[in-house]
Image (cartoon, rainbow, N blue to C red; front, side, top):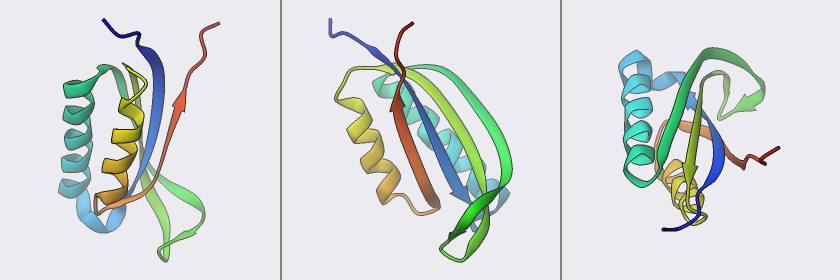
Length: 98
């Protein structure tokens, strides 16, 4: 079995998709992560002000995913973030064990 590393990912969802669209995107990425990795937790931080305008938007909906996956999965998750309408920004970070 392949060695799994810990990761966290933050996605910023556009508010223009509406409440139902936001929840649909959260569920979509939950299912993607559960299919290819071990989902540890999902924290919905909610609507927050952005540091700068992104696509003329000043606010976004923040979601934090914590998961364990093999080294090849973060690239696939990043690819899916990039091709999904409604995702303003995303970041995937490997967590170090202490």
